[in-house]
Image 1 (cartoon, one colour):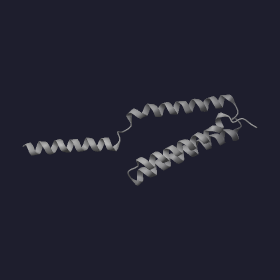
Image 2 (cartoon, helix red, strand yellow; image 1 turned 135 degrees about the vertical axis):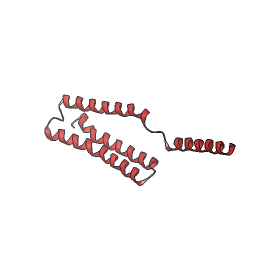
Image 3 (cartoon, helix red, strand yellow; image 1 turned 90 degrees about the horizontal axis):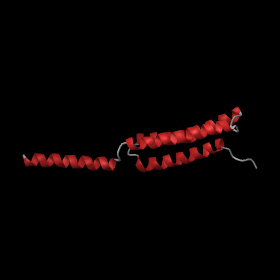
Image 4 (cartoon, helix red, strand yellow; image 1 turned 60 degrees about the horizontal axis):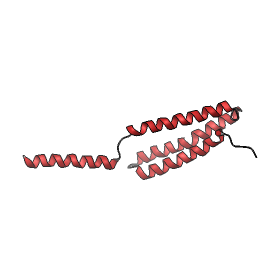
Length: 114
């Protein structure tokens, strides 16, 4: 039985990421364009790792340690970039709706006070 190398794990990891993206999109999307964008990203998460793994396999370099280290490095760098982007993501709609309600309430109090 042949051992699976790191390159062979790429499509599996991509499929897991796509499933997570689909679930997140279905739970958080507020409109059809947001759903479409989320589903397109899920497709990209599933397709791109497969194409990369298949291309490396066809090129005959999937079993080389250097290519495996490169792929692992790219995955780690990607995860770190995503984690770095989390603090700058927009706030959830519930928080922004609550903030908007507070601002409207303050405006209404000012008008009734005059």
